[in-house]
Amino acid sequence: MPDRISQAAGAIPRSTEWPTVILALVIHGGFLALTWWWQSLPAIVAVFAGGWLIAWHGSLQHEVIHGHPTGKRWINDAIGSIPLSLWLPYPIYRESHLEHHRDEYLTDPIEDPESSYFTKAAWQQLGAAGRLLARWNTTLFGRLTIGPALMLSSFLGQEWRLMWANAPGRRRIWAVHGAGVAAVLVWATVLCGVPVWLYLGFVYVGAAMTRLRSYAEHRYAESHQERTAIVENSHLFGLLFLYNNLHVLHHRRPGISWYRLPKIYRHNRETLVRSNGGLVYDGYWDIARRFLLKPHDDPTHPRHS
Image (cartoon, rainbow, N blue to C red; front, side, top):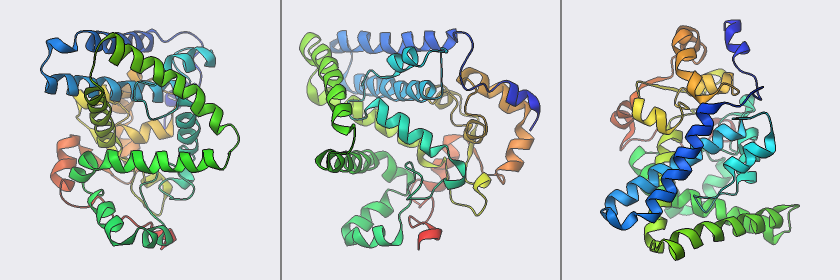
């Protein structure tokens, strides 16, 4: 890949990246406005607007994890740590996502914390009903409907076990996170009067939008360089995901700022497509056309079967 990509990909910016600062103001300001004036909107509009903002906030957190928008980590962490989604503590997301960027382990259900695959042993332990749900979750329709519930229950169950076992630092992380969640809920449900069910709708729809992004990002291949996809021609969702749909470029150079990704991708498309073995989708409608009711892949990992 040309050297200009390496030059564009410093892990920590030397100066403040104002487009990301402005984006953070838009997302947090939009959240405050929506929760304050929610009664002026039809419930379905409010749910989807809230879901969009929470998914967008998750994309902002992802940007912050990779060292943006300033050269000071404490400022970046402060921007990303407000728990609008309620369920995911920022320090846990940060740690697990950086582990995910060990590309040689991509899709491995033991080494990659963001893998959607199962080992054979874990697959057998699911039982018949669990395997049925897991297979449904490999379709796009399943990933968008039951996917958030399965993800949340699995994550929270795992975290409960870690806290029960008094894993180092876990209880402190959740105590701090709980205080942040309380502050968000006091603002939204007490001061603004948002019903709890409506806010949970924001969270669920936001999680579903995020699951759309991650659905086809990775697929097992013998070469780890061919396990990361590209979703082209997606302007609306590209903005929502901060162009993380150009995922192979992000994995090759995770320090590139979100607003620079499209131009750098266009200039290096041929090299990137060749490097990932041609794993390219023509927008999310293409993914829906292929996988709405069909599995994206076998849920059991070939190396662990």
